[in-house]
Image 1 (tube, helix red, strand yellow):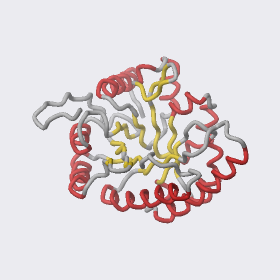
Image 2 (cartoon, one colour):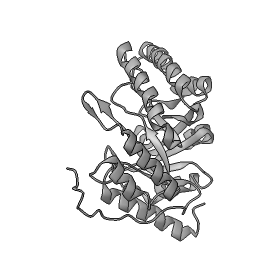
Image 3 (cartoon, one colour):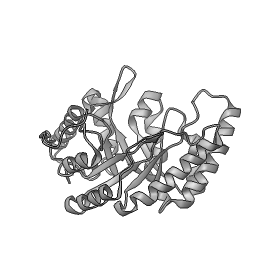
Length: 276
């Protein structure tokens, strides 16, 4: 349900410039459009994750006026944007038509969002499962690699085109990182949910990471408030990010979860005296 223009929106704790990294939230914290979310998030955080979708007749791709407003907010509030490319299609889908449509879509979004000078564009390499047989994996790597070749050729900066870890071993993507010079988005929730070795993943990929997704999980559900994490997991994660200078997105999609996530991370910073 969308809020009306006359309804007052609750505020969030101010977390701008409190950390060595750039703390962010997604563009779906308030039940309102992209511009309304951005206006209300800009005073509170350093970065906004613009979550895009386009499926059939349903799309939230911003028009030129919205892009201009987002650019103005960035200038006013020292704000950056990470652009999460749509996940309606799969990069490694068996259908070539689907892969081509995804590549076309990504290229259009590069052009559309160029005025925002995004910190990163985030891409899922969907189309495979961790328990798929080797022959399916080989076909997926071939198909997704061909689509990635088109996308990377059009990307303004391949280092800002970041592959996100999902539910399969991320090393299956390693050849693309080197071949195309891609960046990385580390999603801690996906690592925890899949039972991955988090320390090993950080040792391998943190050096080329531009964006971190940080959110709680419980009983098979992720993208929960950071309050859902145990003190040990929460503190260990923040310690691992102490020297990180990219974007850390508290990737939750509801106001109360956003508020409690910011409160917890700000509380940790206050206890430690510094988050840098």
